Length: 70
Image (cartoon, rainbow, N blue to C red):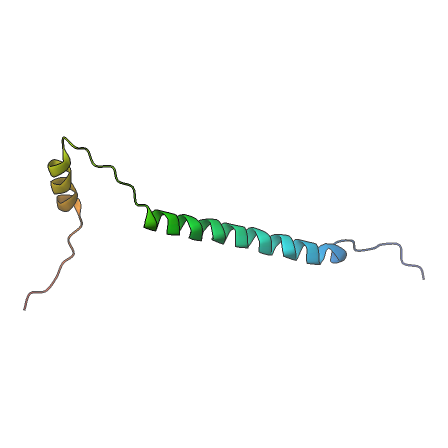
């Protein structure tokens, strides 16, 4: 019997694997590089006029966790 159907997807399996690994590596490299960049160069947006007021608001806005006093 002669076979007339061929599975062309099996031959492309290695290509799809390499493309998938490439996209995952690209995603993680962008994430890691941007994390390192923002850790080294944090955003410095402080208003000079309301600098003291902004500091008080950020301290007051922080979430306080419950604790048990001895």
